[in-house]
Image 1: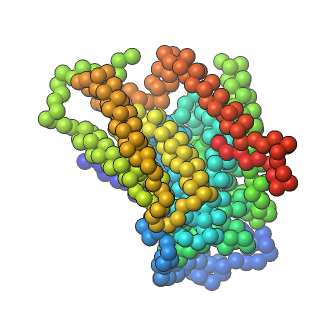
Image 2: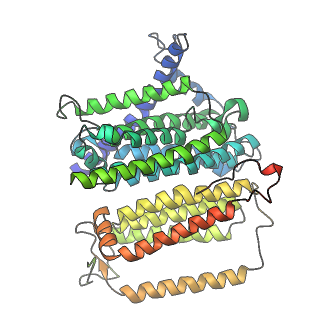
Image 3: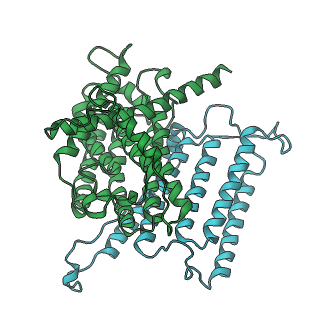
Length: 322
Length: 195
């Protein structure tokens, strides 16, 4: 009985994190973007610096009418937001935030593969939305999403493979356990490739070609309203949390910090994740959108060779130090 | 290397929970596969394929082959189906039925499919007969075990396969590349690259 209770409790905690952290990132984005652009951002909702703005947004979304276009493929159209959102919830279950069994939703033996595989499924949601909307802008968005995923999945996998080679394990807690401080300069290329490819997979600026609002309205999500649209947005922010958490765990040493991993290790993980999330927002404010051919060129001529070079370097160093 | 334990204490009449789950997922997978080839909606076929491939991954999981399961999701659901959908959207994938999505080869395709299925089932049945996988012990399909078996016992086929894939890759590049001679002014853009 206590086993079932334990699992239920863990899942509940993961679910709470899944609901809270994306909102925190979203609110931070409101404020950080505003301050970087010399304005204040939301200030009224909730009283103190507009902290309740996203809650108010959520209420607004829930009240809106849920419209399905007449020509749309109803079932696929309605299913798409769930397909886009659920993978990130599943991934969150496997990300460890502290040492030991207690600080991870569920230990997955082949964690790195699980995480990357399930994250890739999320893109199906965008494709389904793009096709089922019966809208040319949506279809274009879906096409761009697919092209982007095909280009950026490979460097992401290669970068993750490099760190798995370095650690000699594919389990996420195992990788963090094996981490040493000098991995940071050793794996820095892989870390950059992984983070950039992850940004592209999430379609965050400067890789937001699939939802480019000045060209194709809102890409695959053009026809969505109300809660379903909110779910897509939530998927984007959950994706940021997952990507930053994964980069932390794989490349930045997770719970390792200057004061040791005991006790406050999980705080280090959260801190590193938060800093990375800030970088994601920062990039959105600072860089213009990449064109489609620039996107493809960056992936195939820069990121893939860099990732391969990182794997070679990892292999050489690994053989030398053994 | 003996992942299969003899079926001393097993029978078909007292299935365990895992076996029941295995059968149920198998039925779902089979149903999705049949729908994939019978539906008239092109994109629905691709989406049913996702269900079928995902069901297969769950079967691997139930047999404790965790690594294979995730690779199945990563490669097939995450990449192959996305490529398939990409191709469908680029060409013609109307919402609703595709009236031209039919061909006279239906009986031939059915015959080939039945023959292939019969051969595979026969091989599997003949190879394993009544052996039972012991699911209670340490996982036999974990990443470590798979890796050791692959790189100790099956290195040569593995390398041969990788050479085959490399040849296919080079072939794809050669096929998709246009020479400067027969390309007109409209081919100024660099050739598309896909995986």
